[in-house]
Length: 250
Image 1 (cartoon, rainbow, N blue to C red):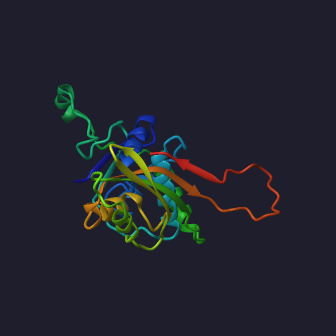
Image 2: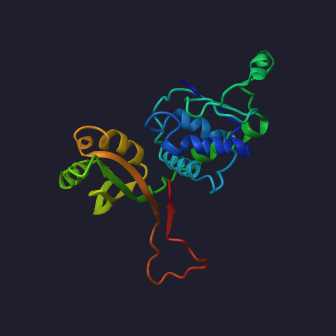
Image 3: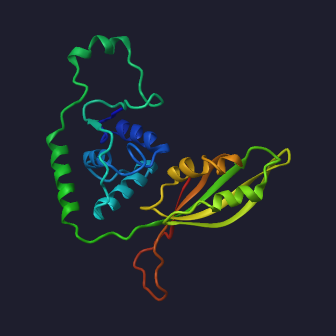
């Protein structure tokens, strides 16, 4: 089913897109596609940092474009420029009012792209194409909360099931057990990922919520998501103060 996004350069459109990307790494599917390119080029500029989910997605797609990483065909997406609503999956689709149904014949639901948006999209595409230097992939440190089914769950086997998940760009770190109540303990475990290689959402859905891990894991939540920035060599003179870590709380 095609995703329909409305006027992504307006405040309402950006908020809808930010809500849509809350539980998604990409516009459609589990890898970058032409759908992501369509939305990326529709944005007139980088989104404000207050839209955390869009900023995460925008930086990731920007890095993929610089390394020519977009190959999938996608499922189809239409970006509207006249309205301020998102129609896609049931959980985010807006309910039509009777008046809207009556005016369907007079309203263009797929507003035409403006000259300003078209010019901005062409300029951005040209800039990406002209950039021959590949951007170094960033890394992130992620803290997961993993809850067992009950107090009889073998937490040692639960941890083994988690650490048995191996993929390029993923490194498991320290872990600890935290009491929850009624004799139940949850596990908090750190992991370091290469942003361009590992999607946390896909890791949880495709590996921790499937056999054999789901025999021990009842739920898994992201507690903290830290962007790891390059360290500055000792002795380097800094002109401006720099922030060395950005924390994003879901």
